[in-house]
Amino acid sequence: MSFISFLNDKLGFHETVHGSDGRFNVSARTDERIYYVSRDKSQAYTMVFDDASATAGDFVAYLKNTDTTGKQLVIHSIGINSEAATSIFELIVVTGTQSGGATVTPTCLNRAAPKSAAASAAAPVNSNSTPMTGFTEVADLDHAGIGVSFGHEEFRIQDSIRLGQDVAVVIKLDAAAAVDKRAWGVIFFYFE
Image (cartoon, rainbow, N blue to C red; front, top):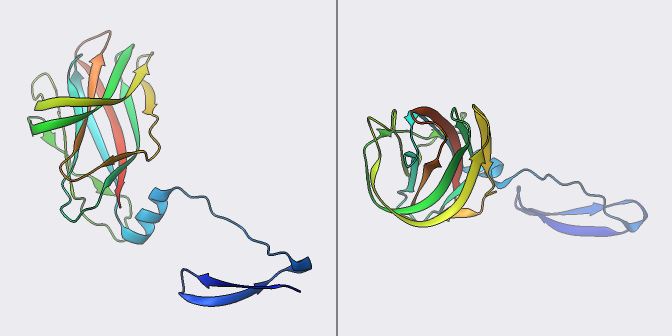
């Protein structure tokens, strides 16, 4: 019978294991990275935004990494909804000083040991009366199109967008078939 020695990374000491017929039987967990960051560090967050009256060209959400310890803000996923049929949204890296809109406080996903997020977040309550301004668009990262009224779409980013200190992104309603329609959604993100 074969014996295998390994370091238990949770307990911090060496263990020995043996299996049948000289084989080591294992199982694996395939949870996404955000699960472990939430569980182990309490550094996973959700940012819900809701713009009651959006028109093409309006910014509907803003998220900036304000961490000063060198942590990167990783965007896990973004879901967007629109009352207006035929809506196109852009995810854009921006510079400048955000003004207008309303401050949004991200919520820690680990409700057993919640921490505050080192992020600045904003969304207009009504972008036609409280628009967000002050941005210079630097780079488009993704587009999402919604073809039906009250439709939902996801930006397909899967943990691939990382924001360093003082880097921000916005979601912009690039085009819509109707004006003054509700646009809302959620950004899931974490720090590492």
